Image (cartoon, rainbow, N blue to C red):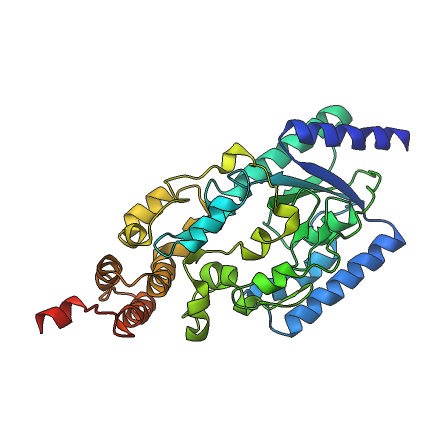
Length: 368
């Protein structure tokens, strides 16, 4: 047993050397742990039954895999959770300022830099190799939002944090971090869990622009701006469009108001903003052609939504923004786009800008 305790201490040290902010270990072969996993899976199944996952069908398809880690790695005895900080700046003031400027595009800060999936998996593999060099061959698999893993539940059980009322993992170091896991057959000792520290605070619930956080620890993804701008491929419900504001990829509002993120420090430099996305203007981004989009977002998580959804999201943001000639021209340039998805949202944006007697006219109306 002493050997495994010493190894667990070494794993924490090696993880820190690789840039991880925090690690913890969940032991799977205990009655208490099985009870906790069963409870978490029951809650997840109830969430699915309410259809709150929207069109994320993969969540419903893989419920059994989430509840049974051994289906992803035979003989799994422990899960190593690792957190990697990503916030691209010191504090949250810059992000709040971007949200307050309707001419600017707001992109969730986790997506301003490189794709976290590859970076996390690469570092987790490096950590696994360090363990292998010490212990010899062992079975393991690494994950970072790449398989049906109950990552928040594991991280809560092993002390990396607790589940906040916004449903994200929260810790005394904040919530602006990525999670990754190593499933292993090593009999590593469990880390102590961390007690929740949200108290009576409900700032995250009040801050949600679309009231997607319907109750503490309960979120209806169908109303969530991150879901609508990233996961959802269709026509964004008109009733929800005004609340999206200038958020064109994701939403950080529930985290920006969290007291535990008040003094957040800059995270890993791998996630530093690229292509000026932290200060980009909506009219400039609307002018990107598909070739620009694909080239500039190589190695970015944004690339997976595709150019059409990118234009869809910007059209909504422009429609919510300042009624300017530049904004109207940017939208009008896409009015005849081949995609019905783009055209419909562009049309909505144009109507928003020329409504309320704002004195704006489309190019067609000027020529009439």
